Image (tube, rainbow, N blue to C red; front, top):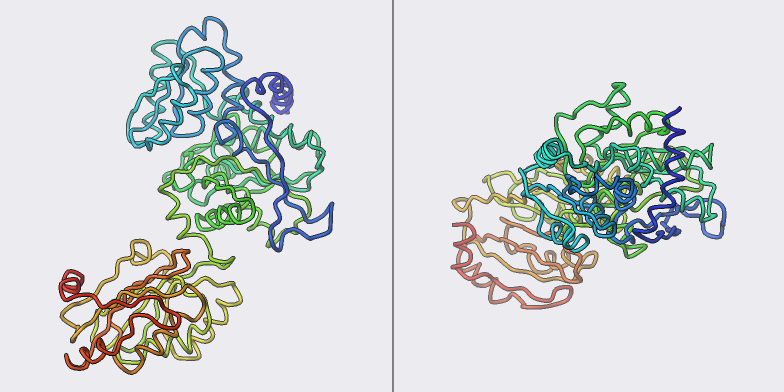
Length: 514
């Protein structure tokens, strides 16, 4: 308890320092369907602390500045040292420039150029970047080694009481907003500095608040530490939520968190991606994966714990643009959950359409992968966006129809879109490049009106892209060259529900299937 009291005292002192480096961030109501009860001013509300609107688009400036502002004259004469691949590096850089001291930040060689540029933008001439190793651990070891050799002060990202006190100032802004009290707060955890500092301050003013620590399922270092009674090193680490990818919880944050965190929730990458989607759809803000973890934890936890007045923190928006494709692919469409099924059907004309008509019904197909690999059997993979009741009804329909199927969300073909197709099995193939209007039933109508009874499917490659027009590559095979020629002659280039249909040339087909 002495440590909690000391952290509270340091948070009071931090309030006098951190606002030299940045302005307070807003607290906003986020109106999520099914979460907020309209017309109820004090119940069923979710409030989000917008740390993504700070100077570095993340909360890390708070702790970095608070710690660096305490440097003695002798300590500030040598470059301070830090290791980070992201937001902490930017916080140290900004603080060094404001305080007029020098900083040397060690970053992995694999750090994207956009993140290195952000550090230099905030720090200017006050910061030097040293690229070291392939991982954060390599960069950390190098930074600590230089700190030991030179006597420079190492600024830790989370395992420092003054850093934690600086992060806690975001909770002070929540309290001062007057929107409390809150019944529950969902706080993402990496090393535990932000969660411990914020939870300690919230419980000071809202003694009855429930604090839920939210961790990615592949990096739950704090939950593991609490269960073991001490911080332990994780054998493996998922890097999707890179801002919270910490292999071992900090010693000081662990001592705090074990006292102030009431429950833990672990969330999947898909659940985090869906929370990013919700932030975008409702607030037009784009969170990095770790920035959306709190909201993902809220959505998951509310299934068993009723929601009244909740607080989440949007911790950062320093998203690597290259991650957008993976995030969009993992997020649900229209609020549904993505599911991938491999369904066995006979390899004969009409079997695929029959499955679409009777088995999948009116479900939203967002992915369709198939390549002919067997003369008698076919195993198409369908990606669906559906609710739990819709999924349960689908399972019953497939069972009633006698279909054999398997859930393949984590299969190689889904992760890498590996669509095998045996060219030697194809007879008089024809491949079509199709553009159709992205609305329910449009693709099915094209297949029903144009293909049915004319040919057999041998290939299908379609993925929902979010555009108004969908794109698919379809492979058909015919009994004879004459039937294929007749089909091509009668094929309309556009029609009801589709914008363009173009047969691939012989050369294009040969490059595709050999």
